Length: 507
Ligand code: DLZ
Ligand code: SF4
Image (tube, rainbow, N blue to C red):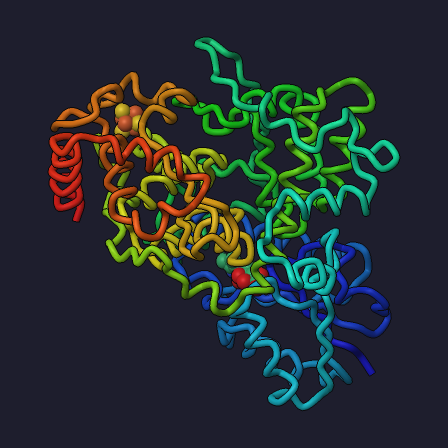
């Protein structure tokens, strides 16, 4: 008898655990496009198109390799539009002996999967997702008994375990982290390589028409659609990155330039997170470039840390802390998301640029997400639920396991310090240092108070005042609270007046 092997949209890896020991002569591989997944949050149009096209291409490559693939299209008659419904229908069609699936990457879907054992008339086997360097058991063991969970220490252990960028027991170059060299401001006229783009083929064009037709009311610009949608194309994006961008990736990692959405970033998160690229592929390619003398250590280490350190760490943390993690709101932030997060219609140029690029590309690089969008949400006290939903919707690389810890933990401090040692809060000066956004802004970044002042400036102090009870004891915030303590009453009053005016206009 046959086995039905399910592959979800973010499991598009030939080496996925659900396919291990599969038998081409008997087994059936199931992929399904379902409405539920596209609308539980109303994903960016490009994100839906990307996943449907990548799923269709992966299914075609499996068929070409001789597998028996059952692919359910969104508009197929009888589509029940849920994973549970489609697995049940496929079990009826094929009467398999068992269903094998890899654990879903999101709590919401895993909960649904766990029920299949009770609802399906056949055996169900759920397997670990082993496409990570660190298993969930290993992470739990590492975290056990620690007072604080910090990425840096976790990352060092993984470096030691894997030998990546190691020389015996020591990190290559003598340091674990070279971020001190990774804070360059982009000089005027800096030439950024053209980002890698692809012309849609027939499969993608069909998907684009479907998305336009069925999800045309979702946020985001669907066309031009230039993403890679196959493993080969994603590997090509990685190759181009290593050759053209990695050498300066470190130096300009935090830099933002108007009209340059991709800068020296790899733009591979969407491919890693759905399986078109493996983390090993990306890390080995970067390490090889370093050893060949084609990329400096600060860039190579910084890039590898994003994948080996940060990506693995947030995944471990997500599974350790769910489902409570999604409910956290340590700073009791309840303000609704302002309309400009959808329209980009704001006089704050940094936000306008970051939202516009997000709308056009379903992408913004990490410092735009953290220093501009996340920082604003933190200072303005926006509701973590609404901010998380926005990040889930708008970015093509977003799945809850990676999005939630980054937003609730790193950007909003909604977890009260589980992930980050202090809130990532900053005024306008830091945005000005790292970008050229302030030059064409309606507001004056050097001005601290008044109608023309950069709102980040007074919102920053207003945030510190609002959360003094909770944050003033944090050693890493000590200097800022000492500055606040010396502030005159007039200055404090001006901060409160400006913040109240700005925030009331916001809602
Ligand atoms: C994001 C997404 C979308 C938009 N559509 C589908 C789909 O139709 N079929 C599918 O298998 N996966 C889709 N995905 C990705 C899933 O949301 C993702 O695999 C799960 O949330 C992981 O738990
Ligand atoms: Fe953003 Fe303030 Fe600079 Fe304007 S002045 S771009 S609001 S940081």
